[in-house]
Image 1 (tube, rainbow, N blue to C red):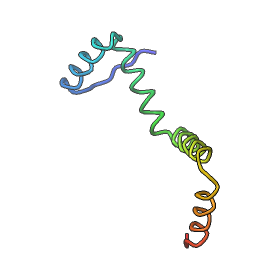
Image 2: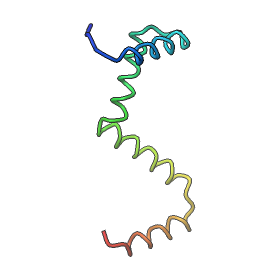
Image 3: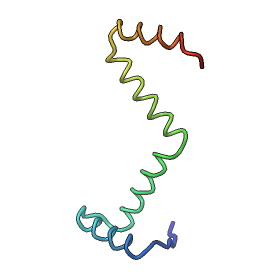
Image 4: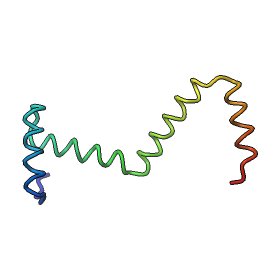
Length: 78
């Protein structure tokens, strides 16, 4: 789909330079930028990213640290 978007001249010039440096078309640059923005700001994407980080942290945790963290969290009033 083709769309028209207004952006400041300075931003356009920076984007043009960046696209040339990365050997990407203007459309590819804007498509990638929008995809990244949506991935960072869509609630489901943020939740999935946080879940991945938590899973990675759990895998690297030893039992002492996990038990200590559990005890501390039980004492905190939420």
